[in-house]
Image (cartoon, rainbow, N blue to C red; front, side):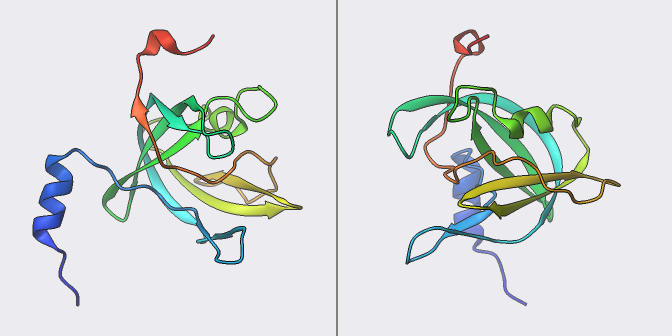
Length: 148
């Protein structure tokens, strides 16, 4: 049984850094590979900024706070998709409440990746493409700065 790096864990907590929920990893030859299904508990959400990895512009996003295997993690998505509409992931998450158990899994549909969101007791089903996998570069923003 391996032991945690206690000093590192304490530094992360002191700096208020929450690890990312990694639903996909970049492949050396390009593209992204799913890390499989992740069953998590919904802890909350808040507005933030993130850097769009395609344009390098800072865009408005939502940071979802989740718990996986007793560890708090975050998953960040842009508020608007590439067509300017409200991100489907956000629309799907609106169906859940704090404390709900959900399963998130990156899946592929053609050349696009999307996140399948399955609530406890729901069956898996194909959803619309909703994401470009990039979770880095988040910072909090004021609620008044969020578009209506």
